[in-house]
Image 1: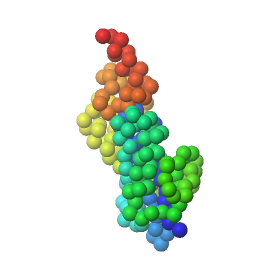
Image 2: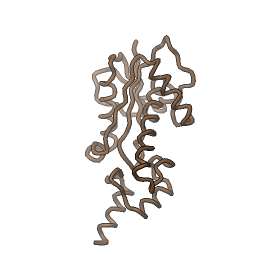
Image 3: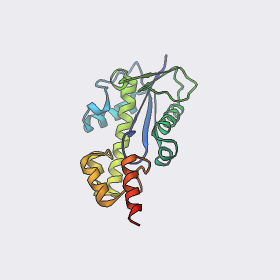
Image 4: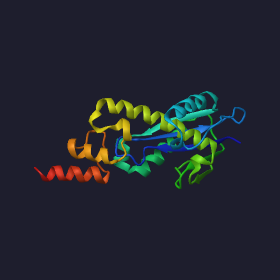
Length: 192
């Protein structure tokens, strides 16, 4: 039976889109050390991502864009990204396991598993692939907008990010529908 794992990263961020990965591991080529990507160092994630790409039967990474997040809301955009990632596999799985408690609209038997990224190796692999790809994109965005410190907080609303937002205002990649960003924009409009 071909089992696919699906996970996302960036849902809680205040910038850009959401990266989603689907992965079907090869049972004949085990990968040691798979777990929730947040529990691994960046270096280890990158090493594992390369191994996953070489050993997996199929893998796919998709982005639910900033525009989709703004138009559909982050949950619906994520579910759309999940569906596209599954459809992007060159092999159709028999079963899909998704990290979390929501399932995308697909025509394959699926199960949502809370904390699945630490319980199901295929979800762990998808988690790692998505996180490595998003981290690479965030490093590139940091080069364009260094004043926000994206390289440190990855777009999540830390104290430093909030300080930068208040000082510089939102940039084009901030999620305008995200409450703290929206409130800052509303305050700016009140000044005019």
